[in-house]
Image (cartoon, rainbow, N blue to C red):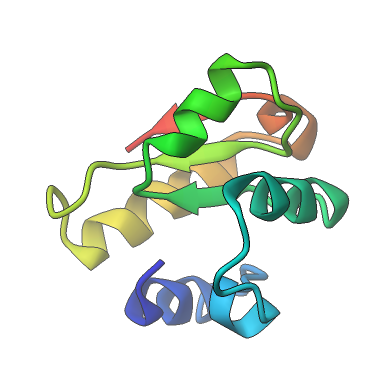
Length: 99
């Protein structure tokens, strides 16, 4: 996720950790999604591979997907805040939301 998006969420008191902050650069997708599940964190991505993992019924705490370069960072922040405000953690488990 772009730093501007992470910072925008943090200014709204939403707990965010990025892949680099977690020290997970270079981790395989399966490792990323397993970590997010263990930490009960929704995974925000532009990588379609995570949609494939979802279709293979790999357990996850939730995935939010948006196509690369189709939304401004401000639009992404607005969409993520809306999801955060409307859906509970248990509603996101093994669920995909599209921005």
